[in-house]
Amino acid sequence: MKKIQKYLAISFTLLLLPVQTWSISLDAVTIDTLLPFYDTAGGIFGPNLLEDYPELSATSALGVFSTTDTPYPTTNLGYQYDGLLNGIEPGYAGGNSVIIDGESYKSTEVKQLAVNGTTVDYVFTGLEFINSWELQDLDKDGYKDDPGWIYLGKDETPNIEDDFQAHDAPFDLSTILDIEVSVTGGTGTWSLTPLPGITDKVENLLGGSTFFDHIAFILKNSTEFVIYDFNFNLLFGDDFIWQPYALSGTFDTKDINNDSLSYLSIWVKDPEGIQTIPEPSSLLLVGAGIMGLAIARRSKKS
Image 1: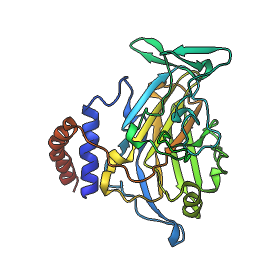
Image 2: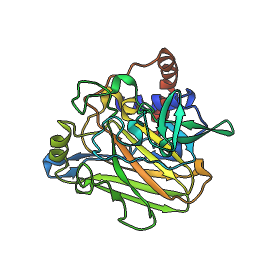
Image 3: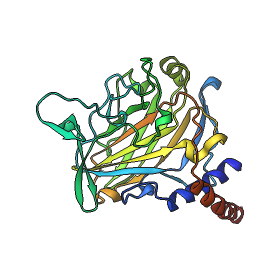
Image 4: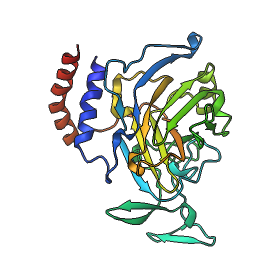
C-alpha cells in the first residue's frame, strides 16, 4: 500500500510541475501491467502490482524532433557517445558538420527540435532523462561519464506479429526478452517479457545488475519522433523491489499528429546501484498536498 500511495502522490505531482519544456502528452505511452519475474524459481510470474491502480504515465518526455532517432549503439553497454541517448560526441572533423556552442558535430547526428512554432538544432548530451550524479564508469576508464542507456531494438512493422527487431549487441537480446508491439493506425499496445535465464546472462554482462531503473520509448511517424521516459526511481522510490519484471501498456501518436506509426523503439538504463534522487522542496510540498487525494482515491475504490 505504501508503495502505491507513494506512486499516486508523485504521479499527480508530476502533472502539476513543469517537468518538461515542450507540450508533450505524458500519457501517450502508459504502463498498466507490472509482473514480478522469479527467474531462480523456474521463471514464474507474480501478480500484477498495478491491477487495482491507475496506469502509469511517462514521468517526462522530449520532442517533437523532425529527424531520425539515430545513431544506434555499437557496443550497447551504456557507454558515453554510444547511441543517441548516451549523447553525441563533439569534435567531428569530417564534411557536413554543424557548429553548436563552438563544437563541431556530424550534421546527421544533430536533431531539429520544434520549439514555440519554430525548429532549433539540438544535440543529445546523455543527460536528457538523468542527472549528472547518475553517470557511471561503465567502461572502466576512471571517469564517471557513462549514461548507461541500452538499446533493446525496434518494431518497424508493428502490424506484423513477432516482428520486433531485438538489437544484436552485446548479444542477441531476443534470448532474454520477448518484446511484442501491436498497432492499429496511431494507437496500440506493447509488452516486454523476460525469458528464463535472463538473470545469469544480465548479471554476467552488466556486473551484477538484473534490472533497469528507466525505460524509454521512441514513437516515430514518417518524419518526426518523440521520446517518453519512465523513471522508476521517481515512480516507486525506496519501496520498489529491484528485480526483472514483465511490463505491458499502451501508446498512441497524439504528439506526432495522430499519424500511423512508422516504428517504436525501446531503450532501458542500466543503474550501477539504486540511486537516491534529491527531491526539490517544491516537489515535497506539492506531494504532501496530493497525498491526501491519493489516499482518498484509494479509499473510494475500496
